[in-house]
Length: 341
Image (tube, rainbow, N blue to C red; front, side):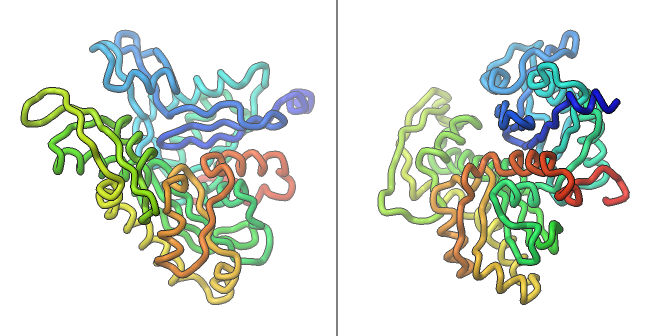
């Protein structure tokens, strides 16, 4: 067994609602693909996973279904999630024997949801499985000194959940998880387009709008773009021009939920840790941190300097990987026991 462990490598996984990112010790990030699986309904076998499956959403025949098995940061369909996770792990194993795996999960998951993640990883061929709370993983991946006796605040805005946490000495002092994040921002844009422009657009188009002209705070240059979709009244394809101000307005409600979660966490923070956060600032991670102006919005609403982490999309998986690589010093942040829930 000692020889097998010597030749094995550790794998860190950010099993996100929107994207799955995989880190292999000694190699770095080796996979970053959408959390989507296409399944052949005739024999219930995977037809495609990741980017290939993502292209099939809304374009499949009756005998193939393309789905996102995670919703709001947790597994919504266990069987499909297990198929997808196994496919991703098999893709990156390349001779890795029975890897030790650490998976980032939202801090607010239930015991049942936690067990579903653990079982899926074990059935995918892991020797040992650990979970790590996403805020801690994101903080470590962002380079925050979580092992020190100083307050650090992280806001991890993912696809399905936003995690707000204050940490010190490798532990979460207090946290809040709201199931409002990137997906809700995209859905808000879809609803706005339907209500105001009578135009039905899909998830991919909504995401494109958010990336190209979406913003959380007014900017010096307000862009616009042409959007194609299905016109409700005529039933025919149509193109309309939308402005950045409209998109910002459409996302105002879900953005306010995220800001309020940050404010509530700050209000509950012990004075000494709050003083540290004022000095060090708030760190943003996750795909939502890439939304133009969101750091300015949070800074304006809280009065605290807000930073966007380097490579915010990869903070959780980099943190999980670093914990495995420095297992001796950071193992306290890992969980493998249901009694912790």
